[in-house]
Amino acid sequence: MVFSRVREREDLQFFAALREAHRPLATAWWALVVLRGVMPALFSVAIGGLVASVGHEGLGIALAAVGVVFVISQVLAPLHGQVGTSLGSHVSSWLNDRLMDATVAPPGTAHLESAELSDDLTAARDFELGLTGPPMSLAMGFIAEGLIELVAGLGQVLLLFGYHWWAAVLVGAAWASTHWLLRKSTVWDRATGEVQEAQRHAEYSYRLAMDAPAAKELRVFGLSEWTVARFTRSRRLLVDRRFESTRLRRGPLAAAIGLLVVVNGLVFWRLAADAAAGAVGLAQVVVFVQAAIGAGALAFGGLNWALPHAAGAVAAMRKVHDRMAEVGALPAGDRPATGMPAGKLRFRNVGFRYSPDGKPVLDGLDLTVPAGSSLAVVGVNGAGKTTLVKLLCRLYDPTEGAIEVDGVDLRELDVAGWRERITAVFQDYVRYEWPLRDNVAPGGGSDEDVVAALELAGAGHFAGLDTILATGYDGGTDLSGGQWQRVALARALHAVGAGAGVVVLDEPTAQLDVRGEAEIFERILAATRECTTILISHRFSTVRHVDRICVLEDGKVVELGSHDELMALGGRYRTMFDLQASRFEEEPDGLALN
Ligand SMILES: Nc1ncnc2c1ncn2[C@@H]1O[C@H](COP(=O)(O)OP(=O)(O)OP(=O)(O)O)[C@@H](O)[C@H]1O
Image 1 (cartoon, helix red, strand yellow):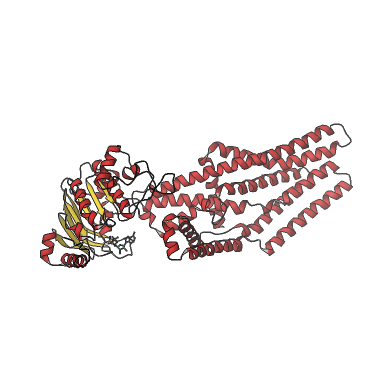
Image 2 (image 1 turned 90 degrees about the horizontal axis):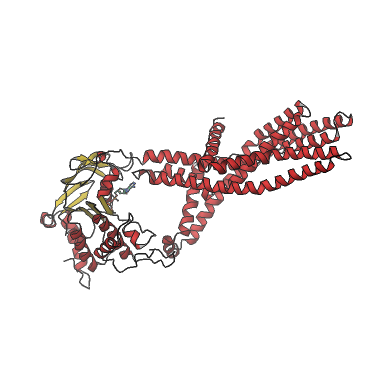
């Protein structure tokens, strides 16, 4: 009962969404539903009129009426199909727009890492993926046909009132009860863990197979067959589950057929008796027989199969939209961040964990970075270095303590304003499938500035500014790993030119050859001299050039000072430095750190 109420609410949401997606098309679609719905009743009446006029005057008019109704029915069907497909495409675009907004709009990123929301997002996207039901433009056809059957059946039942009220009520009630009997055969609860997991596996395997970046590993590690097998297994499971849930059940089906046979038998028997007695004329018999047959066919429509899937997508989208806004929200301050930091950045007793029951990644971390200075953060893998800069970029907020900019809690600053002050090269920077110009200046900028940033990053000669950096486009090209990294550096340097005051560099030279690295890094430091620079690197040859270095361990700063100070201290930094230096000194071609 509760379930059916939820479904009804979802159905209403779906029909409201049609209007939101495209009001004129939705109006036309509904008008055509009604028009096509009344056609069978009109056709019954027209045939009755034809029979009545046999041997009388007006046969031509009656024939013309049958012809007109028939032709209109034939014309309306493809027209409705077109309108439905077009409306379906608009609903798909409308859903996609909202899903993109749901994922991109929240200022934080926690909503993209939640398992619950990932499942919901997959369910919400299924109107397009079509893993558990027909895609939206196809579903519109099934839904339309189902609604037409409904209107048509009601029309036929109304016609039966012309014969006897009890005949109309009996046939109408038979339809309602067969519908009730067969409802289980049309309902599939897709919101189970098993279905959602299979959907995600199928989608992921599909993407792995299609996406160029995975192509190398799939082949080298012999994963092609495994990927296909996983996709097939997941799809199979979904098909099986759908079949198990929605197959016609023998008992209810037999009961439904029995009921229709009995009711129609009764009505036909009585109709035959009345016709024999001359109480009902031949023309009326023809009309009522068609009406009874038409109404009897009602319960087997595809409405209950396609509608929950389409409506479920709209409901899931709304849920994802609201929940993502909630989970990805960050408390919004409104203090402007113009010119910040002028004095210092301060991490005050910062603690952070990714989930409430997860282990702390940062724990009582205290660190001050004077504005305009450079700081390197070093530490073993997983020490929390990237997490630290993610907090600084306000992708998350500390779970304890605070980050302060010139004494102001970051949470009090306007998020967009603060992010305008910050630029970053993340470890997993994005390789945009855009022209080189847009890769460097995504927010726009003069060619002169773009070229200057590229020169500074040693990336001036890789491609023309208009060349798309992906091979899947006409004239497009790909770059090497190190070349891509220089383009990402150029992007950050361009942002510095546009006014960013804090530069975060997370392993910015990891893919550069050792000879190019020192030269590039010196240029970067020179270009960002006025900025507050935070560098994360495992390469001590890079790290040693910055003003101060902090060593992160167990979520805290365990050492802080200049390269010389930390070397003299003889602690963690020294150990790590010496270890790396000795590795390089062993290299036969003499690529020593010094
Ligand atoms: N989005 C996330 N959700 C949950 N845990 C995470 C997430 N990102 C990182 N972690 C965990 O937080 C810890 C710190 O990760 P972080 O990326 O900050 O380390 P790091 O010092 O930058 O490491 P590396 O040197 O390998 O880049 C790790 O244990 C990691 O597993």
